[in-house]
Image (cartoon, rainbow over all chains, first blue to last red; front, side, top):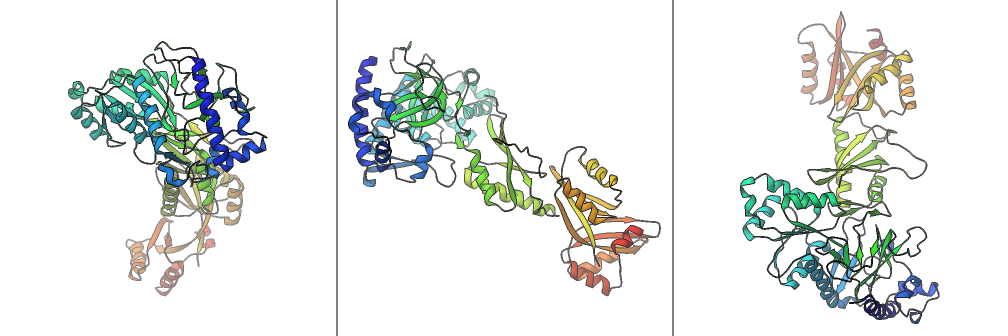
Length: 423
Length: 141
């Protein structure tokens, strides 16, 4: 498809989508009215920049179903983003949305080299998280043999890979390395693995990590990208050229903006990635700010595809961390500590990657008022902090009590996180 | 009669204990008894000092987490079996001891006790005619 044909397709779908959200989602109608915009003002993709943005906070504020554009009876599936304070961001799919999702994931898998003879080993978590089920239906669509292993239980993962002859592994890149380590412990069984491709996503990773995974597993490691707000995995994926991720732009129009001025950046410039969904029915989003930083490349790819390519994301324009595929904002930890009388919200979070698994260690100051003379009381406090945090963020954390006033105070933005992971 | 003990939260960092003791030394505060309860990451330093008020003031000024605990000090003769007698008396009355430490001089030995119920322990020890010490007694011991 030529760029002109793509733009014509996008324009048609965008006009239709704006019409729908204007009439069905009060949030967008209000936003557009505040900007003096009518649906008929949007005549092509060139008018995209006139539309209002959507943020994660907007989704939280309309929790759970406030931004849905169809009656709940039309929603056939709900997913929710992992690890957000109290209120997760909830996404809803109509039957057609699920078909769209399967379609885009199927395209991604195909571009990554998967086909119907493959045995897809899906080690993403199944459940509210979009990773597992997203990959699942896309894999079924291409006719592959799907093994819905879900996450965890490394020994069983490896046994199933050997016994069922898994040819494609889908999980987070750090878990792929973790599995590689466990696999290497049993050299004798090395030849029993039939893996040839890995489809990895849900967390940032570098070229170094790719090389390491490819060498250790003797596979081709492909990057897949997505976020639940837009649809889940399947928004973009690499092809055999491994030079950028092809965006399924007939469904999701990408833009790059300056995160400060919010202006659209010139082609090729690095900035924040923004998506407008143009075919979704359940939760259509106008100019959703992903906070991921990257660039877009409209040049045709060696593989022959004309779909625009995004580079691997290089960072975030906010302070979100991705820990074992789970999104974590430092403010979530702060809110837990604020709710507890015994602690100050002065903390420092150390993030490490030990044996390819992300670990969290939280340093919390002991409040002079609540300091108890007994070790058992301090241990109880440690456990309580640990429990409260784990039940909020859904990640295990090691809590360490430190002396008061030893965590650096700063006038401006306090340094709350020390990320020592090497990608 | 109880004695006020100062507890200080300390991270396991080298030089930290020397720092606390140095601060007290500069203020000419004498340490009559000292013990440390430790875990792998932090410890609780427990002290009985000559000038309790001043010590707490200065430590709080230096941002330490300080806790004041009433403990019981019992003087016993310098003889084998005398500690055991004290403990047996308390356990007979089902009083538990959370922690204790002791030191001796030429003439006697002193046990510092943190019982689960201070009032009950004082009552029982008094009834059995054990010699309880005041802060001054300890300083002059």
